Amino acid sequence: MGDKLENCRCGLAALGQTDGVRIESVSSFYLTEPMEYADQPWFVNAAARIRTALDPFDLLAALKFIEQKSGRVDSGIRFGPRPLDFDIIFYNDMVLDTSMLIVPHPRLHQREFVLRPICDLVPDLMHPVLKKTAGQLLADLQSGGQQCIRMEQTVLLSFT
Image (tube, rainbow, N blue to C red; front, side):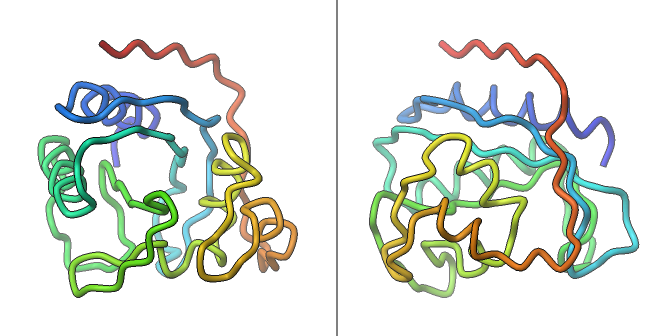
C-alpha cells in the first residue's frame, strides 16, 4: 500500500537501525504480481542478507514492530495489501517449526518473488530441508505465469 518502493526503503533503514542487526547486502527490487489474493495492486519485493545477534523469535518481534510502525494493521485478508511485510526466509541452516515461526519459510520454493531476490545475493545458499540451492529451486520453479520484474532503479542505502 502507498509508495511501495519507499516503504521498502524505510523498512530496510529501520531494520538497519535495529540493535543487534547489521545489513550486509540488499537485492534488486522486483515488481511482482500478487499470489493467492490477486485482486490487489502488484507488490515490490526484495531480500536482505543480515547478520544478527538476535535469536529468531527476537528478530521476528523486531520485524513485526517495524511493520506496525509502517502502519500495518490486520485487514483480515490473508495475503492482502499491506504497507510492509517482512519474512524470515532462512536463519543460517536452522530448521524451526513452531506456531509462531517456521524456518525455512514453508512456501519459499513456490515463489519466484522470494527466490529471485535471494539468488541476487546468494544463489548457492542451500535449503537445509530440500537440499537444493536457491538457484536450483528457482530453476525448478514452475511460476504458473507469475510475473516478477526487476525494477530499473538505482538504490543507495546507508546504514549506521
